[in-house]
Image 1 (cartoon, rainbow, N blue to C red):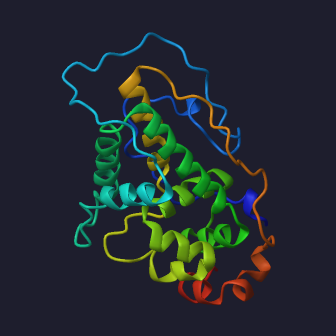
Image 2 (image 1 turned 120 degrees about the vertical axis):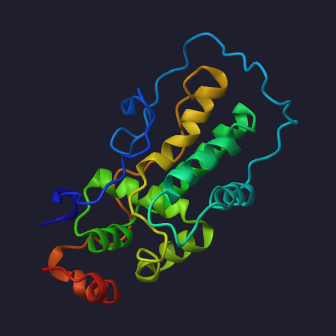
Image 3 (image 1 turned 90 degrees about the horizontal axis):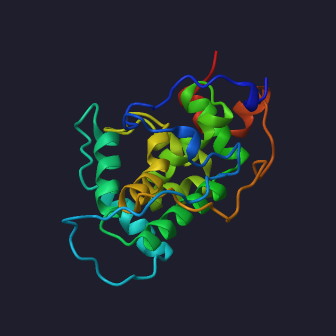
Length: 228
């Protein structure tokens, strides 16, 4: 059985706001086909005065991710993901709409960079199965863990054997995290964000795996999360 036919066994889905329409936002299956901007402008009465726009480079992007993790508590069994999602929303609402879009673009570029068979194999072993939608949520979680974890995993998927079960890590699927920039943009402007025009690969990079060669491809992960 190949990865795309697998059933996702672990998922997030706990923190989407009431009334949130998931279909309006980006997904890899639709190449993030966002709706065109519509609706009247929203005026943020009482919002603090914003500074001029600063460039949202990759360093600033990762700094915001790390700041969103400021409330992470390894002693907390549940609640770290919700706390991080809300903190990221708070941080993004302090930015200009253009900066939020820049942040969104950096996030989606990282999602594309992690679209690799090795990381899909890691997700499959760690969670006991991982569908294509689940793999998007896994990559969202990977970004939420910060630059060090993300870049180590992109370089070597087996590095996640020391991360996925670390204290305070609730789940390896964080669907809600990837939606925060779009939600913040709409909350700030009253409009849906413009379509993302960056890289959106259709197929994962790297060498495809099958269930039969997972033990050989990922011996460290297999030893910890061996199947069957």
